[in-house]
Length: 183
Image (cartoon, rainbow, N blue to C red):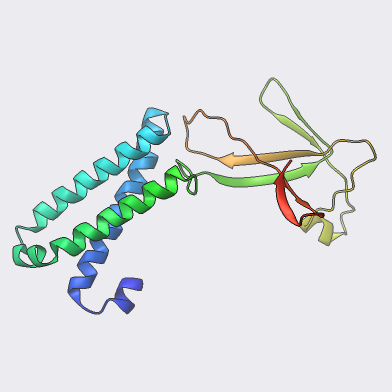
């Protein structure tokens, strides 16, 4: 939609489409190489980016057969767009702004206790609410007991065969400084 509405001429659309294609190939390769190899990290991310650059280069070489003059005129804009995206994605990755692979939080539960059994199943103990109390079924209210514990259970989606540890960093808002601090 963006390209159709804002980019009125064909020259801009091809640069945008090739850059978008690079983003798609890069993203797919990061996921695909991670799943196939069972690895993730800087090496996989860099390799995915380089392979994506190579694939887009071959696509541009193929397109030169059909629109050689146009590509010669727009070569600088195409290279700038694709390399800018490559640099931005790598900067965001190495600054830990984007994860190495797509992870998503499927479920989170705050409860009195979480017990993991040897079978891999979990038992979560939480406060029962009456069936008629719709509000508390939608937005759980937690009442900690004095001296009791608070547990958090999360389910995170990750591609299969990925073996890595996931860490949660807990923060609280310090009322004295009004800033968030790690717990």
